[in-house]
Length: 290
Image 1 (cartoon, rainbow, N blue to C red):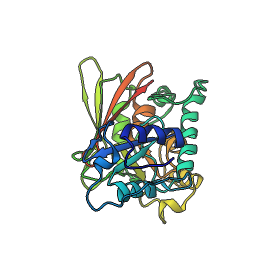
Image 2 (image 1 turned 60 degrees about the horizontal axis):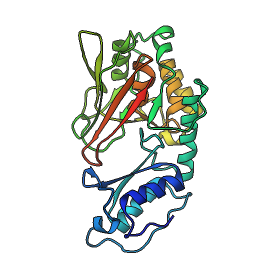
Image 3 (image 1 turned 60 degrees about the vertical axis):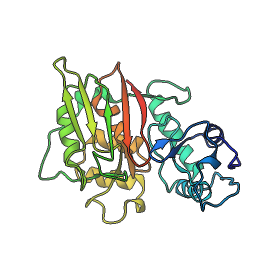
Image 4 (image 1 turned 135 degrees about the vertical axis):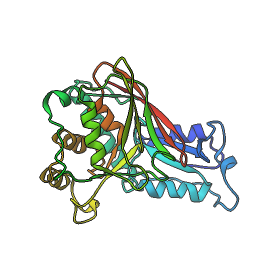
């Protein structure tokens, strides 16, 4: 793949997806760039001119920096279903492998072997309220979830859903998640509005989370996924949440807020619209189908 200033944004996004299997989000300011604009038309004065050919062994953070340096483009790389952002320390090839694993785990229980789409499939919602106790022990509970978005949580970044029927004990689950969440700008991870018919709308202060906290003596990237799960288990983290971290996080380091909503809070048989707000990088949306 060769990127040049003559290329249109829509061509760049298509060729990137064809080459690397991931979604490239291209921004102009805090909005998505016009698909028909050329890359050169978005270039600012002082940017390096010339073509650029990314390789599969390039790290995502380096790729995003290169596009900014060469063309003045602000970009982010998302998974193939466009529901989460890939970690900056992953190479492009590793990010695709992780994405395939993520999609495969979603499809396994349904016996679905088709490729990923813009709709996310839920297989874990029903067992949450049937098998798991979400009672809270305030003595042993630890803060392990932190925002991984730039900007002020709940103001510059956030997430909201369309209305849906939640699992029966959704308020216990939200209370638990809020207690294990910590942020300098927001006092909550989730808030909700409940309607007379029992449906709720969820609001989250961030759409992307990272794991951390005092349960880890070192930087979390020094631990393997198995070591992370073992430490969290020893510190009494809820078993269903552990399963989500093990199966859907980026090596135990990053987790989308949408994964928590999908696998913990929505009853089966619904389509839920999710809107992610990001005043720095632009807004996005996707659907969860349960």
